[in-house]
Image (cartoon, rainbow, N blue to C red; front, side, top):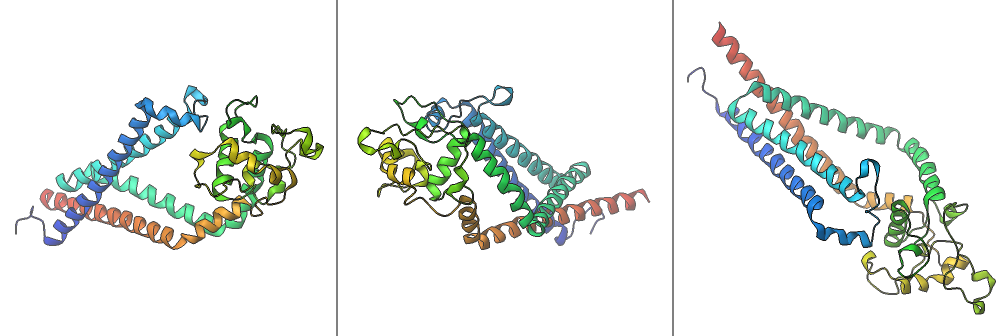
Length: 297
């Protein structure tokens, strides 16, 4: 065997590296395509009927475009990683292999650090995030009535709609309970369907309409959200009878726990792939270094 030839083990490493990075490259291209499609396709503007994504955020970008940009950036990173790893393994370009190893190494360190943080400081994280979420409800929640056409209620902000979307679909209320909506500053609690026959107690809402079961057997679909559905939860929202008792934080954590095994398995598989890619890259770099030392001597 010549000095420049490659053994079966190294050929296998190169093959696995190429396969892994072609996978990264293709995922990156798919994300780039999705992100660009969202940016340029005018038909997606119909989503604005549900979410106020036409509202401008910093630098004049809409919320939809911000999401698209994030997807494009993520796709671009995966394309770069795939290119460096694939070309580095196939052509034995040491610079590409070193850059690839550095990027994968940083990703692994970041993932391990995040895992350790959430495992060791989960209770502390909960203590920190819950007050912030409650403050957001208090300061930003405006109610769902602005989503109904032909009303004088102004259209709510995106964060307010996000809360209604979450409570409607997950059948929960507030962060810990319905009491989280006490003291809201922007929510107009006026009952737009009030008539004198209802009595004065029905003039204002005590709790959000989306905290009540207003689906009436209809599909659990936010796109089918209607004024009729909202009005069916009127008594619940005024009196509190039938309001969802479970907070959304607990509901969301219970959902994560339901799929915890699959989440852990997926995370372990991803980490193993990254570790293999990193180890194989180091092996290829070391082989290249040995060949350089041999030929220079």
